[in-house]
Length: 367
Image 1 (spheres, rainbow, N blue to C red):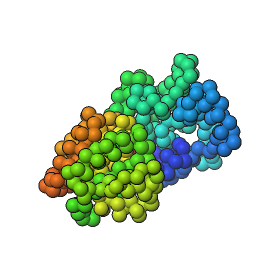
Image 2 (tube, one colour):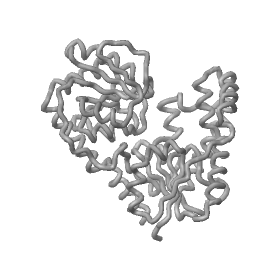
Image 3 (cartoon, helix red, strand yellow):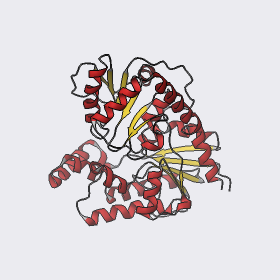
Image 4 (cartoon, rainbow, N blue to C red):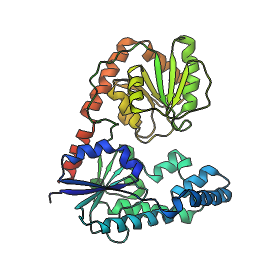
């Protein structure tokens, strides 16, 4: 059956982050509508503070309270029922729903409209790789959540996932059949590839510190101190969040605009991302689009983005010493930097771009 009308659902933030995917998809379908999730009553400021306060008292942890507020089966069901109600109210019914991530399901009572998913991670992976994202007070609560999560995967017509790590967890942790899963990757905040010439020699290192601890900020700071001993002119720029850092040659502008990141990328020689957990960081793809080599950890989907000794470096031992050694090797080797730069751009142009990803989605849906 030829699909002409698609409805995109998911959290408003997730839909905004993937706007370039939908621009690429819009050229393939007659109609692409959007239905971002509306806020539930308990997510308003005062109820949210009260509920989180109660959770914090019960768990003795603000982190656990936040995780429990976000991921519990009652919220999942409530959001799913509301989403289904909103879809039923539409005058122009979609032929297919494209649902982004798994914080809730687009349907709960009836599944008469097929839906597909785009997925970056699962709770099973979060439990193993970054526990602050997940907290269940007892086994019953945990089982109730996983029942909801399994249901959304099981009833989906197809699941498009960013990495093979997610494909593996869907099969092993949730029992989803192989033929229902397609790995398509992701891309960044751009539709067209960058063809501007990239110059090197600034010795500027860039780190996305929006979630400083999880993304390996402690390793970056420690490694940079070692790098400075060998390269006194080296500079570290930390973006994403304003931090209490007062170190020489470390700039921390915090959250920056798209035009500012453009300028920073052009003045950067290397991006470092030694994250303890990072599902499939689009920041790496944006850097590679500018021809910037990246150093990443061997966790999650990062080794699927960065090929070791091709367009960057993958380190499986997260130590400041090893990170510093690789930083120095790239910054002091112009030939290596140039080859990695070209390989990074090539990978974005040939694989991790939204037009190619949209074509893969359309091809899968037509079979």
